Amino acid sequence: MAGGAGEKTEKATPKKKRDERKKGNVFSSKDLVSAFFILIMFFSLKLMGKFFYMTLFNSMTYWINLCDGSFALTDGQLSTIIIEVTKTVFMVAGPMLIIGIAINILFTGAQTRFIFSGEALKFKFNRLNPIEGFKKLFSLRSLVEIIKSLLKIAVLSGIIYDQVKKNLINLSKLFDVELKTAVLYVCGSIFSVAMSIGVVFIFLGILDLGYQWWDHEKNMRMTKQEVKEEYKQMEGDPQIKSQIKQKQREMAQRRMMQEVPKADVIIRNPTHYAIAILYSPEKSGAPIVVAKGKDYVAQKIIDIATEHDILMTENVPLAHALYDEVDLGREIPAAFYQEVAEILAWVYELKHKAIPT
Figure 1: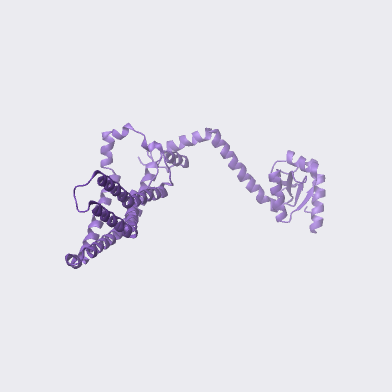
Figure 2 (figure 1 turned 120 degrees about the vertical axis):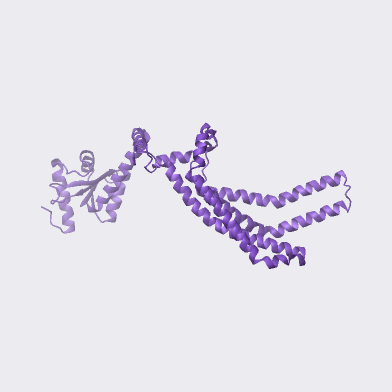
């Protein structure tokens, strides 16, 4: 039945996503990495082609001169050739190896935000389960992988066929030109094919990234019961409770600060305590404490009041008493009517306003 207790119909909670991320369960597209790998590697080959050619040419010239036309090599000559061959291999293959590793790290890390978890490397017996393997064989993911492979084959075949068709006449003339010219032409054609393949594969990789995200979100879904259980666990967690209370305090403080510009007067002592008083006969029968605080909060109230030209007065005993005895948003007790009324009368006199009745 749709929406049943056992069906995973709910989106993964932030906690579930964090926990799975710690385990290394994140989505990424290997196809997108491969596409950039093709583009950057072939582009690097083109940029460093002259260097590679000269390195190989110089090395081969050196080996030929060293042998001096003789195939009978001494131990010293053989050792020298082995060292030179090793150096040449490192000079040619080394930069490409470093670039290849860098591409994989950067483009995989960009998708996963460079997360590393040893959890994915742990051996799990359920991976050897033949039933699970059989299910995966006939899953939607397997079907998508087959479709992707067919698309890649079609793209490769189409681009190579198009390139050969365009250059068929030129290819037939390669036997009549110098070896260097023929090699340069073939290398240029291969580079052109690689660039075309890379661009198309990037487009396919972006589509694959979208699919990987969708599949990841689908596999992360939770049942209604799992969401309820997680919520219960979080409610009982002292750290979570503390975070919730902190958030509530911050929200309450923001709401309180929004009320300061509406106040008639700020009573302070002079910096450690600040009480914002509002008197509106239409809403209440007595003045109301719309904001209060001490130390840092008191200073914020004073700063906001200064910005909005709210009058302030210093009255140490009254500020202390109001802070201790009157809750936020409550009317002041009758015991403070006289002192507060005198302050409000002073405020209205300065503002040339009539005292509200």
